[in-house]
Amino acid sequence: MLRVLLYLWALPVTLLGMLVAFIARGSGGTLLRVDGVLEAAGGWPARVLRRGFPFSGAVAAITLGHVVVGVSLDALTATRAHERAHVRQFERWGVLLLLLYPLAGLLAWARGGHPYRDNVFEREARAAESATLGKPDRPNAKVHSIGR
Image (cartoon, rainbow, N blue to C red):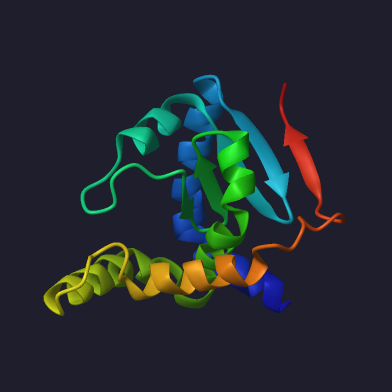
């Protein structure tokens, strides 16, 4: 029951992520479902990620609720631990994270830090990533290809 509530709490952002994922699929990308998270690689959104965003520049992947969009399948694999931390953040904060994330970047900048690197949400995701470095991918991860 808790799992369902977490999905519902993040649902508004997940729906946005699904739209981006389907745009990726429709423009030549790939969709996968990995451990309950929809992952999209390639297509038009990958070009946007490579081009980058203000403050962060180019990124390998981005999380929107229970959807992760990456530039490639390799990028999704490489960033999985980091992006899953962001999935958990969406489960905790829901749609509020869309406001809290940029506010945290603004606060980091106001304190003399970098709005992306010193953002508390990015620091948390990097810590989760560091905790899994050197550990092999879980052999029991459930990966399902969608389409094609």
